[in-house]
Amino acid sequence: MRANTPHRARPEHWARHPVHVTLRSAFRPLRSQHVFPTLRIALARANRRAPEQFRVVHFSVQYDHVHLLVEARNKRALSAGVRSVSIRIARYVNELLGRKGRLWADRWFGRDLTTPREVRVALVYVLANFRKHARTRPPRGVDGFSSGGWFDGFQGWRPERGRTPWARRAPPPFSGDEADSDRAWVVRPARSVLASVGWRRWGLIRLDEAPASLSNARSSPATTPR
Image 1 (cartoon, rainbow, N blue to C red):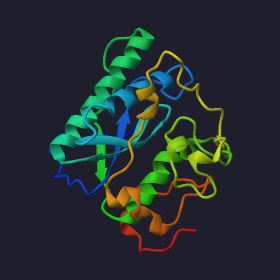
Image 2: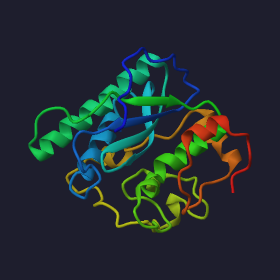
Image 3: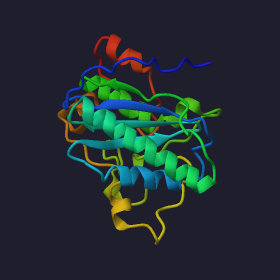
Image 4: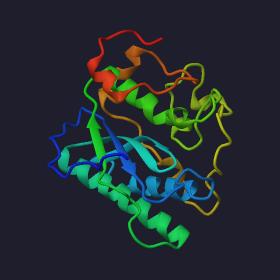
């Protein structure tokens, strides 16, 4: 059984450091054709709230948890932003399902990313997390339950190059009754040097790449990824 996130003061946060955030759900499955589109709308609308203070740069939705890569101006903006995202997701999903009570099983966990290598490892961990949980060898391609379709850091494919090489059947696209701004702002462009260009010195991400241990990104010696 996974230990809960300790109730202690969160560390100081600096705007130049992206943050990998994990939200653990008491409800499952979040990763479904029925639930995911509503969760995606909640993310988009939370991401329109105060982008100068807090923004979701990337995300992926798994069976019982959500991974986010976020940027925030300071510690206060980080806490307020994650709280806004988590509250909006909980409200939208509960309304969709007609359920009451807590959606989240625990406090959110956040890890500041302070080096280009850490950011690259976190990007793979977020965007390719479905490979970590796969029971069989997953196919090459982009996870439809993530922001991978907006990501321009894959080797051999960019969003503007036409049809997305989905690894699995993608969830339904935004429907006609959803605002254009929801479609446009599911994720925001990264503004920090580390999350926009710094990580690229370690190489673009392969469409079949699987996550490595996040702890190894900080403790291992620097080597060019293969």
